[in-house]
Amino acid sequence: MKLAYLQHEHHEFRDAAADAMADAQLQGVLGRLADTLGVRNREAWEDFADSAATRERARRIKDATLADLDKHLETLERSVTRLGGRVHWCDDGAAAREAILGILRQCGAKKIVKSKSMTTEEIHLNPALVEAGIETVETDFGEYIIQVAGHRPSHIVGPALHLNAKQVAEVLSPVAGETLSSDREELTRFARRALRSKFAEADAGITGVNFAVAETGTIVLVSNEGNARFTTALPRVHIAIMGMEKVIPRLADLPVFLKVLARGATGQKLSVYTSLITGPRRMGELDGPEEFHLVILDNGRSRILGGPLRESLFCIRCGACLNACPIYRNVGGHAYGGTYSGPIGAVLTPLYDGLSQNHHLPHASSLCGACQAACPVKIQIPEMLIRLREQLHHEPRALGRVERWAYGIWARAMRSPRLYRAGTWLATRTLGRLKRSTRWLTKLPGGLGGWTRTRDFPAPAERRFRDWWSAGAGDWGLGAGEGASPASKEPFDHA
Image (cartoon, rainbow, N blue to C red):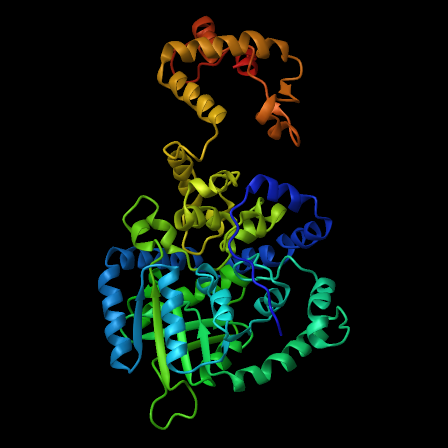
């Protein structure tokens, strides 16, 4: 089976978003997202009586862990080593790829199976494995579909969410050697037949890590298909890769995160399979790997840890913010151009891959706050997007000349009372009075026209607040005591 892979693509979010909104099939798929995962997420929290306290506790654990991250990672290394495993520290994606390839060369692995891992997507592991001549098979059904199709994941939890059943059948039929129907059960049966033998043939299995428990050296894998258990139980070598922020201090902390992860991801009380793997196979055990390797990835995380956007490292990769976001539900995941999409992707991609190359992403949000409300650990995503927008002004290549000029004038006017008064006076005496009857601008010029293509823009009031205050404050009985009321509500209509 020859498979294609797409690398990370830096592109203009606006152009990609326009293409996505013109794709009728994609719009049909995304239109159902709010009625499926979105509804399940909301219902899961509503049915969980202790949700607020549990989410707050998960947030506090994350915060405290990051405050002493170096100590917890050292504890994790000691625990894994004590159990007979090996730990590999990697500064970036290139180092992680080389470490994994080195392990596979050492054990002579030619065939590997993988379970779902966004971290391996982040470091572009699959293309490197294929280039090295290693047969690589994704065993999560969604990941398997996009691997065959040569696509990138479009959702953190549902990587093939952008495809409907008919398209999935078209993708898999050439591999099956027959025309598959769009019946979901038939497609699942085919995947089971195609993948089952791969586990027994594999020389090594590669997984991500949902959580790593420092005190016990345990890695935790959460899934709904059981493929992660096959990937870790049958091959001789198990390689797990994790971002350094995935560590939690104690085993007693794990139930807190399991409660919020499943509800945030798929609206379940608990995922179908939760695997706790503690080192390689021991004497007398019937399954499990002979070798266990844990790859701990930095890839910019230590830089983020000491910065103002440290809170982005709270993310547990549940995808809840994507399900809630009105932007994601209109453009899908591929429009974001990176490994991570949706609101959290609009934060993580600029942090990991550079702000100037991803300058549109901080603006890919209405700042409505739905993402923060849905997040199991209450990450303040809107605030972080605003901080990234602020940082854009220190990235000369991120803004065009006209945009920098416009922001410069705006900033100067906001700092100068005289310019501010002059600007508001001019706006009210021109547009404010011109549009006094409709109070809306239906068409804005130049680049501002993007707003009015789909909605109107509120026109300035015909009278400034300061003018109303100066002229009418006395009529409002200021200082007359509680209960004083105006003779007319007219000022409110024009303020």
